[in-house]
Length: 399
Image (cartoon, rainbow, N blue to C red; front, top):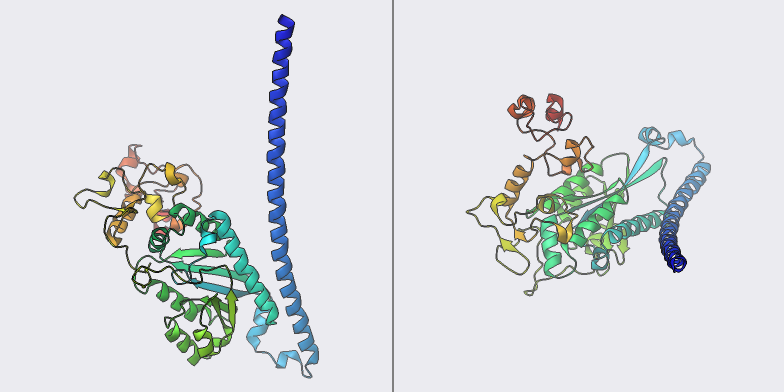
């Protein structure tokens, strides 16, 4: 009887061990397949850029051989100064006017990565078709300016994606490359336009800038800026990025080259029932709805139950439905400013534990003690800002 019990116990142990091995094998195979797919995607991207680079070199070599006078007498001196430098191909996007495809947004992190890859591939193929010739290496940058809270409000109201999916999309997009970034301009009628107009006026004048791709509004928003660039004879560096369905009025008016993108942006921005665009440039209407609730003005923000989540409103919250703070309040710009000021009074957990903060200046938490080097609580060993250099004068001055 005892022998039978031992045998059954051993059999059960072997069955459990075999089950674990099979599960581990399944997980390993799945991870290997994911990595193989990722490598294949990267190889496609690399092949596209190699093709573009080879075309550029071939064209430049043919032109050099065709010249009957020395090349040094044909090109401005600045070209030779740039020969061994990295040249810039820039893409700037009005994220309020060109809203990313909702199918990509709902995929979260993976959708953000796909959007960045599709943009990169489209630009690389365009440069190859246009035979853009350069004397140095190309560095590709994407900058998206948008009103984060306003856009989240629009997307959620029209049930296009959840705030958590949008935040994951932003993370996936920006992590695709250190040269890809999404910049929150906050509320303001012309906040996004002002940033992009200044961006164009500045970077298009850099001799290192080879080409700028602009994805903006299809109305007359950017006409004045492009007109100013035209008067300075700088339009030869500008290309218009258009989504499917745009009328191409801007490119026809200024005779600019156009790159049409399919499935990257929504063909049409979501509209309210009155036919007008829900504008992310303006704060959401302060009315209680199923998607939001108002702050009680008689209570401090931290006295609400639960208080608003600092990371959700000021940065990005990755906790989703498990977060113990609220993501449902509708905050005014003044309340957001108060929330930001209060958050800076609490130390960043990364720096507090001696780890470099991955968010840098975007971090909503305090990187330096508000009381500075002469903090009274520090002398008593009771200050919350315990990280190295969180009280040093040099760190405070450069933060």
